[in-house]
Image 1 (cartoon, rainbow over the protein chains, first blue to last red):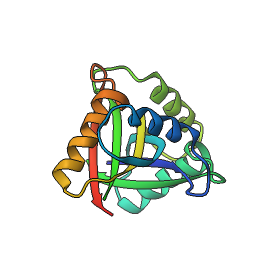
Image 2 (spheres, chains in turn blue, red):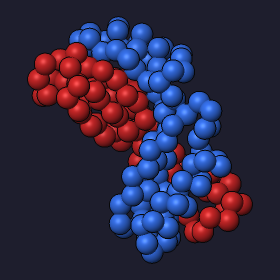
Image 3 (tube, rainbow over the protein chains, first blue to last red):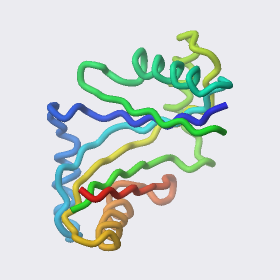
Image 4 (cartoon, chains in turn red, orange):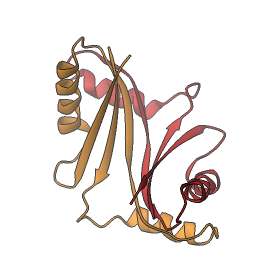
Length: 82
Length: 82
């Protein structure tokens, strides 16, 4: 079994208004200069497959078909043996 | 300057209905057994501080005051020298 951690981020070329709003809010906190804020999704799941290649393939299929919008988003998969 | 990557997840003890909905949707894809799906947030930002300790402190303050709800959520910070 593997523990999959998936990060889904907007592509660099896509404007991120939510990130801009967070950046503006951070500006009111006086914690120094923070910029280029971008907000994405983080999804964890347990994948019941014995080999790493199979677990990666299953997770990629879930990302492509369900979790990420391939036009606007990129996804990164990290697998840990559980 | 540092590139901060922040993962915000619901605490283990908190029910995640969004994760349950995703898990149910994954069940219709025929990609094998995937369970314990939990959905969180992923936030990237550039922190203009020279030393790593200072960058971590600034990012933690942003997490505590703005990004995470400390009652229900945990946050994990990764810093990369940019």
